[in-house]
Amino acid sequence: MQPVQETSETASSPVAAPRRLAVLGATGSIGTQTLDIVRLFPDRLSVQVLTARRNAARLLQQALEFRPACVVIDDPEGYRQLREALAGTGIEVLQGEEGLCACVQRPDVDVVVAALVGFAGLRPVLAALEAGKQVALANKETLVAGGALVHEALRRHGGTLIPVDSEHSAIFQCLVGENPASVETLILTASGGPFRTRPLETFDHITPDEALCHPNWSMGAKVTVDSATMMNKGLEVIEAHWLFELPAERIQVLVHPQSIIHSMVTFVDGSTKAQLGVPDMRLPIQYALSYPERWEAPHERIDWVQLGRLDFEAPDPARFPCLPLAYEALRRGGTAPAVLNAANEQAVQLFLQEQIRFTDIARLVEAALEHLSEPDEVPSYEHLQEADRRARRYVQELAGVAAH
Ligand code: NAD
Ligand code: MG
Image 1 (cartoon, helix red, strand yellow):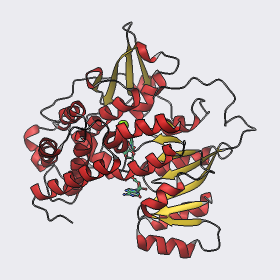
Image 2 (tube, rainbow, N blue to C red; image 1 turned 45 degrees about the vertical axis):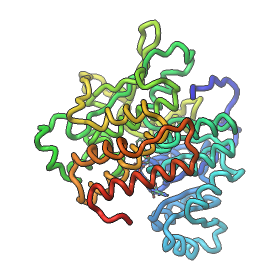
Image 3 (tube, rainbow, N blue to C red; image 1 turned 30 degrees about the vertical axis):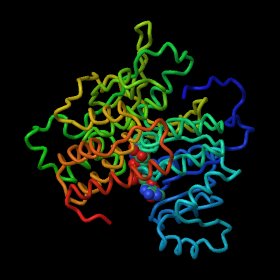
Image 4 (cartoon, rainbow, N blue to C red; image 1 turned 45 degrees about the horizontal axis):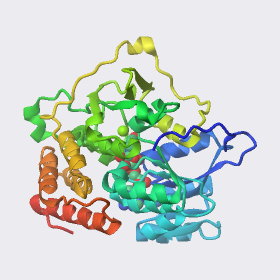
């Protein structure tokens, strides 16, 4: 997926109709920040669909503000409440995965913002691409687990994928105007999270509250824990592999504690381009929605003098074993990345429920990767779903927690 060089008049010129969005995961961190961007550009963006897992109260509030054509909720009780509360408004209420897959294919949706968390995003993203939609992708687990399937859907149906994840947005921005063949390496920057300098011998005692306290970003719980283990960067290496079509050995990770450089590209002539900005997800979200344009906005600018310096260091594999595990899954291919992802999702959930230690996350993921990954060129959705279920069950069993 390389930036397409477009010069024609686009949807954001004053006379053009607004881009109509389906925001999947509207009640989450990326979802609510997406709606902040819609509020900034009411003439250029409109909301057709809003979805959530179970926060019916917030979804209702958003529906009454943005007046979408349709809302989707996973939780049956939330579905009942929303149907009652939205009766007579003309807003359609759908439920579950079927509802998600139907709403992204609506003819009145131009762009699907995929801000669900986890493997649950894969099927709706595939459905959106099969309908030829543009997908602004935050949900990295979709590409980690189903990268090959996503590629196939893109090739067959002519949809497009624009990255929202800040590192991938940075790389995407660095590639505008460049020939993809002149890229040598991608350098993904990582903050190093809250435990970059914590004594390693205390890692067994890390609590969920400590892991949920990220130094630079305010995000949903799952991605925040992933940042603390650096599995997040591992998932992002796999995400970058699928987005920019480069092998693992040409995707590097560099720890940069200030999170000002969001990532870099080194070209074959030895030159490196970087994209910088304050750590604020609204910037990459807006770029994904405005691309190929840039829209004037009052987001905070970098204060260079106050910033003073930028620091860099190599990631420490002893401290962050999840990062090499992700490289290993990418090298193995087949169902290995899906197994890594599912084992990690399950382990993070168990850690947040205080059923396992912080250091067990990498241990459980490694065991699942070792025992369950299978080679398969392009695993089918059903094969991936089975790999996902088995990995979750395996982690629950190893952790001594009853499967449910
Ligand atoms: P979040 O937990 O804050 O929000 C997740 C949203 O998805 C919520 O609206 C929730 O209701 C919905 N959801 C969750 N599970 C679901 C399911 N099974 N079915 C249907 N809906 C479901 O998460 P977030 O931090 O906004 O992250 C969303 C995605 O974006 C993740 O993949 C994350 O890795 C990625 N991302 C987030 C950030 C960030 O700053 N938050 C940055 C980069 C990438
Ligand atoms: Mg990121």
